[in-house]
Length: 417
Image (cartoon, rainbow, N blue to C red; front, top):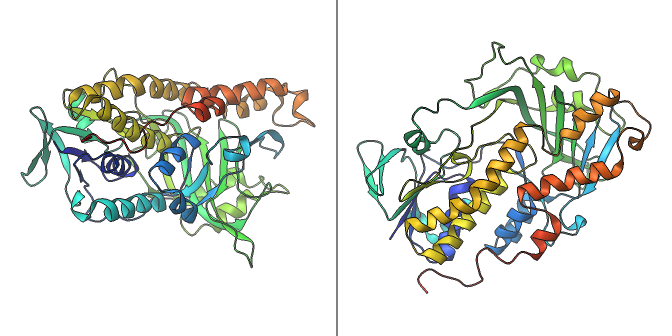
């Protein structure tokens, strides 16, 4: 009755920890020869942090991340559009964290090895498909038999490609992201996440380490983003490519404000990586019999609203809950999909249509070019508050609803009774 998990990223490791918690045998197959930290900063919303805490990882999260206090939007001239508290400062029962993606992955990996033993993960095992009810096809002519298969192998999922062979490559929306970390001073009182600019040009920045007690410097994660024409001869096929900052630094040279110096951030990075902003169309189905998709394999979306990694963790917990309800059977996967797919489809479409929380940036740009004395002269504060709350509700982390929601995995529950 073993569940086979394809992929040892945040989604797959979270599912492994959940299955171990509820007493379900599993094996993870990871294509890389060695799991090591990759990526830059991400945010974990309170709905996902709650699940990590309920997996017993609160102290580990505090060791690698920053409890985010504030989230703010600012015009291209550095003017304050909207600021709101985050995590426990916003009355959530659980905090929000800003963390290095690679450190989060390694934290989950270490916890899983400690709890389930090293044999639960096989590295250097690339899955390229499945056959029959639940046979996983691996490279070098190998295969593995299980009761269920869960594909957590990301936006380029091989199992998704087998389910939908005509889907093609991820869809580029014309935007390119340059991502890096720089040692820099904190801003806006510390532990703050900021988004500056508008749809064509913007910067996101937040600390992913506590400030050094002597220098006051922190590891600041930043993302610079620029929109190109969809027919631009851009390197859309390149992923995680080291970038030349000369390709985008001139666009941000004037973004020097009394609270943040964007050109200095860009110049201060030791290496900058380049990503096209891509997603995929929502699928009509994730599940085929004993096989299902989760995380970015199921619902890749634009990195708007800090929701991608959080939803992958929640996916894992909901799969666990449905296994408790239905047993180790395809019905559990169907029930998981029925619960989650409408939510993630709504989030993905909202992000595409400019319905994410960052939509206020372009609205201000359209109304006044980013120049104003007080934001109420441009947009009523009540409208800004309503927009912020709407996205939280779509993504499943509105304050009142999350605080009142019962546990996804009941304490002490196990499939084996």
